[in-house]
Length: 175
Ligand code: HEC
Image (tube, rainbow, N blue to C red; front, top):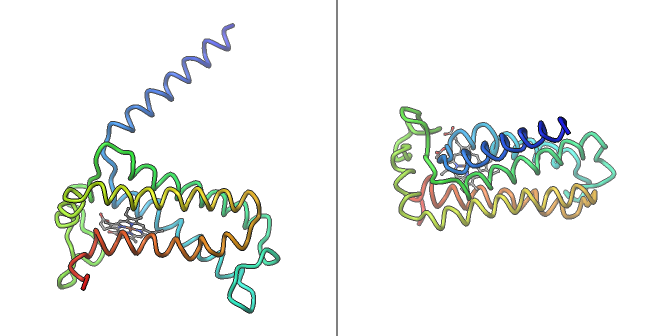
C-alpha cells in the first residue's frame, strides 16, 4: 500500500515535469549542440566505419556494442526532433549567445534565425517532425538489426539536417 502511494507521488512528479517541459520554449542552439549534432556525428561515425567495399553499411561489421550505441543515438535524435516540434515556441539561442559562423560575412545571427522561424513556424515544425521520424525509424531499424535500412537512414538524416539549415539558418544562400 505504502509502495503504491509512493509510486503515485513519483508518477505525479514525472507528469508535472512533462507539463512544465511542454510549456517552455525549446532552445534550438542548445538542442543542436547538446543533442542533435553529437548524435548525428556519432551515427555517421559508426555507419562510415561499418561500410563494405560497395560503400554500404554491413551488418557483419556492426558489433553488439555498435547496435547498443545506435539505439541510444536513434532515441536521442527522435527526442531532439520531438522537443523542437512540440515545445511551446522555439528560441534560436539563449540571449547573448553567438551562433557558429556568426562572425562570417553574410552569416545569420541568432536574431535572424529567430525571425526566420517565427515567420514560418509551421514549416519549421515539419522539419523538426522529419528529424523525430528519422530518429524513430533508426530505433526501429536498430531493433531489427536491419543494416540496409540503417544505411538508407544514415544518408537521409544528412538531408534532414541540410533541408532545415538551408531554410532556417542560411536562407540567404538559397538561389
Ligand atoms: C528543424 C530544423 C533543424 C534540423 C532538423 C537540424 N538543425 Fe541544426 N540548426 C538549425 C538551425 C536553424 C540552426 C542555426 C541557429 C541556431 O543554432 O539557433 C542550427 C544549428 C546547428 C549547428 C550550429 C550550432 C551553433 O553552434 O550555433 C550545428 C552544428 C547543427 N545545427 C547540426 C545539425 C545536425 C548534424 C543535424 C542533423 C542530424 C541538424 N543540425 C538538424 C536547425 C535544424
